[in-house]
Image (tube, rainbow, N blue to C red; front, top):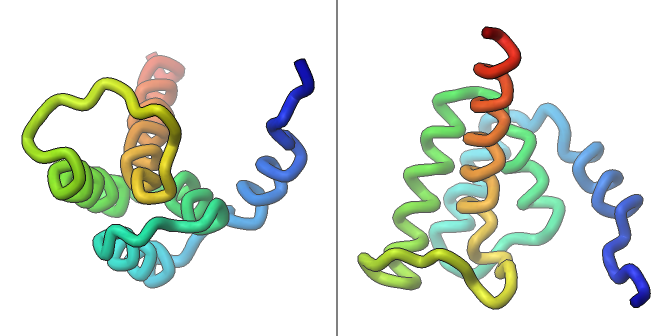
Length: 106
């Protein structure tokens, strides 16, 4: 089976999104709330956030988006990753990064 994931492209997008400015992140969070989706680059910006206050805001927004789309029910998987779910992806990545850092510090 041919690999359809372009690792180099993903790494390039993530590299270009490093060290996002707070106002850019806030603008993307506002855009995400419109439920119109985010581009891969915009998603990468959210994935690169390291500021805990901004991560918390991303996670709160992800919850709002999830409830707007799926209601108040548990969603364990989706058939594909939609650009609309980018804040949730960023929240999961931030949680994983925080957990990894906590483990490494002990």
